[in-house]
Structures are given as structure tokens and as C-alpha cells.
Image (cartoon, rainbow, N blue to C red):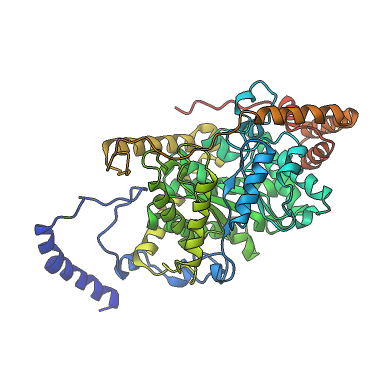
Length: 560
């Protein structure tokens, strides 16, 4: 009799002789225990559960820094280099954001993460009639290179890593960053950071797109191609599952839709740029959410790494191990923050951050406890940084690599989530790829359905939420909230008027005309013309306006 068979027999004895008598007196809390994915969780897990899946250590796990990278992309992980503490921040005018960045760096943040307001994300200058009420509200207003210069006043751009959450106008904003760096004697080849540049997830979950899918994919891939040739330290895209999770996706959906998007980008870059996969894939990065179901989230991250390694090796023939490494940023789940009893959010985000760390993240943002009520205050964002610092310096969780590896439950759950995610990717392949799936509304419908089912369960009390459907208190939160100065818009618009009055108008017009000519062609890269226009002080709205004229604007299909 094998060891597994012996354990199986002993398990049956234990259930009959120990568990069943206990259950007669003390029934378990629920008839079924389910993860957020809807996976039923058994009472205990043993080697039997892994044996039933023909589980093999070297095939499923291996070692950190080696294929299939389940245990992490780097051999020593946090023992060698801690994750980057990168709080997403930015609001109001450039001065407000600069002040916040300098504060964050002073209290221990190790990388910057830029938030942009909605007009910037949608290619509108702050004096546009549609932008008027949104200037500086959910991020910093960034109409021109002048604002970028103010944001980074006193911040060493050659020493700090900067992440930019920008998509439909990613080239314009990155061009501003390059132009400011070069004006300070910092060459773009030494700049390090990430630009989100993930337009597919905008069509699926977030809706901050401008152009139709085909030209938008050209725009995104032109940025990837340019960075691969000119910016060796820059991550040219952050393929994002976070927004799927925030919109309602289950864990398997989150990683499946994200990896399906990544497959689409890789195909486009290879076909459009005629670049071997190993020349650009090492600089692809990812972005996931961390929710409160601790073990499921850890399993999700590990499954995603293993899946991406397999995709790159088997589907695209990558040879460079770095092309197979899934490196990712994590943000705790904003959708799970509650306005009720907001201090409880500190507990939620700490557990979520722990999941990210135990899952092997490369950088981390911990949401502030007051974000269900307002943009975070200095006090709340300081506590978010302290959460990360306690995990790093006091908790011991960073002292060994992938400490939960070998847990029967973790390994079984990792396999289960991976299997579910592969089924979704197979369906997307059957539909003809992610762009076609988006046009048919497949991912949009699946996420909407999952979101509805989640909300119904919350309202029925089947999913407990402290302060909402459990331990509810009648209260008015007594916390300080951040309010954006209404004078921000005036400040930004006045600077914009001054820039337009003082720049070389003929040069701006010539640079915008060049953008139009290149946009009308299929075989030229749009990045250099946009960079030249930005250096000539063309505004974000002017550049986007030209591309709107050539490419048009996208209207979402009815998905139901």
C-alpha cells in the first residue's frame, strides 16, 4: 500500500471516529464553505488531494526564479530586494501633487505612482467644456509638459521609479515625462518605471477609452515598440486585472481576462513591430487586485505566474527566462472599502496586503481607510505606508521565499483557480481572440453577471461585510476628509493660457500636422511625432484632438 493510500484510509477512519461524533453535538457554522470564486472548501486537505491531480513538485512548482515561476520571479525574492512601496497618488494641480509626492517619499515610500484626472485620461484640456467640473478631482491635471515639470520639482527623476496610470493618452503623458527628464540632463535610457497603457481593459471594465479598438491597439503597441528600442529600463505596459476585479470579476476571471489581453498585445507587437518576442517581453508587467479572502488571493497570484510562463514558452516560443516571468504590481481592493466604520478598512487592507506579499508581488499600494469617503489625507496615507513597513520589517513574512508552498490547501487551490482560468482563455481563443471577444461583449457580460451575483449575496447577507450587513451601527463617520481646492482649475487654466500665448505657434502647428500624417498611415510609429509635439509645447488636448479627427471615437456596443 502506498503512502497516499495509507493516508486515504486513515482519513476515512478519522472522519468516522473523530469528526462525525463531534458534528452531532457541534455542527459546523455553514453547510458549505465557499471562496469568492465559488470554490467549495473542504474541511482539511492532505497529500491525497494533490495525488488526485497527479501533482508533481518540479512540474508545478520548481524553484524561485526558475520556470514555471510559481514560487516567484526571482531566486531570493524579498531577502534580496523588498517589494516597492508605491502608493497611487495625485490630485488637484501640479503643486498639490508635488507636495504629496515629497511627503510620501519622506515617510518611506520607495516609488511613485501617478494618478491623473479624468480630462487628462480622456484627452481633454482643462478648459474644455466637458472637462470643467472634473479638473484635478481624481488625479492631477496634466495638459502640458509645464505641469509635469512642476510635479517633479525637487524629485530626482534618474533615481526614482515612476508608475503612471494612464491609457488612452499614455504616449502624450510619457512624452511629457521624457521631455522634463531630458531638460534636466537625464537621458530616457536611464528612466525607470511603468506606464499602464492597457487599453483593452478600458473597453471591458473601466470605459476611459477614446478611439476604436484597432487604432487604439496600434497606439498601445507603438509605445511598447518605441520603449523596447529606446527605454531599456521602462515597463511599456501594465496589463491590468485590477479593474476587472473592481468591476466584479471573480479571481479566475481576473487572471484569465488579463492574460488573454496580454496574449493580444504580444501578437500585435510581434506582427506590427517585427520584433522577436524576447526583445520586448521582459518589460511587460502586470497589475492585480488583492481581496480579503487570503488564501484564494495567494493562490490566484501563483496560478497567474505559472500560466504566463506556459503561455510565453509554449504559445510564443520565448527562450529568455525573463520573458516568462510575470512581474506584477498589486493594489488592495478599493471596491471592498466601506464608508461605514471606515477604520475597519485598515484591517481589511492589511490582510489584502499580506496576501499580495505572500503571493510574491513586486510592488504594492495599500488603499487608505478613508477612500470610500474622499481622496486620502496625509494621515491615512501614512498609515497605509506603515502597514507595508510593518509587514516588511516586523512580521517575518519576507524572510523566506514563498513560505506557503507545499501547503496542501494552497497547492490544491492554485491548481483549481488555474484550471478555471484556462477554460476562460480557451473560450476567448474559440471566439477569435480578445478584441473579437470584446466586440461580442463576452468579458463585459461575464463580469457584469458576477458583479450582480455578488451584490445579491451581500444584500441577502450570504456574503458578510462588517458594518454593512453584520455588526451594523448607526453612525456618522467622524474623520477628516480631503477636499480639492476649487481654485485648482483656475490655476491650471491660467498656466495653459500663458503657454499657448508664449510658444512658437508655427512649430506647434507643424508638429500637429506631422502627427496627422503619421496617424493616417499604417506602417509608421506614432510615438516620435507625439514626443516632438510635446517638446514644442503642444497640449494633450490638441494632440488627442488630431487623433480623434483621424481615427474617430469609439461607442461601446450593447452587451445585453
